[in-house]
Length: 245
Image 1 (tube, rainbow, N blue to C red):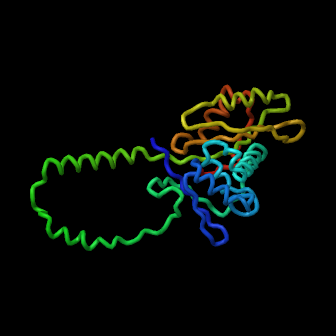
Image 2 (image 1 turned 60 degrees about the vertical axis):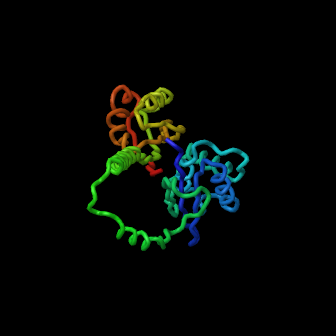
């Protein structure tokens, strides 16, 4: 499948900013220029807007894009340390392959040739027999429409989990291995860290990315993390943050 063009619309200080195809040189350059005078995508603290743009980048940006690299490493560190929960101003990410890369989006313009098209209808024989070529073309259009519907990508989400052990004697390395041993289509485990709970007990904080149509977080917790054999180490599991990508 050809790489889709990503469009991110950002409303900041009553001014809309649009980025196209963040995984291309032109898209990264525009993001780099945008972050020249900013620490975050919107506002003055890391938010879900930063998570959305971070997730849209397929790989860590090159140091050539110094502002993007600085911002990316900062958000990456926050995700590993404590996650990001601030709401932000709102960032929208859509597939927009039909829009020219690097060009700002604009409202549709009325087709001035529409009346001429209507005039052409007067010359058409609406009651004539459909030719074999016309039938074949109609079948191909129907098949293409059906196929494009099947290719529609499912949405993704970034989830931060708190996984707590039974007591201070639980082997946290084996606990994390038990968590990561859960594998299924549409699930990708990410960064993790140990955080103190109290009385010498630590919990595991771990990020994961899921395909919404393929993975239910509730089922993942109930049927895998809190079931045998993982429950030998895991006492409870809670969702700390759940962000749409």
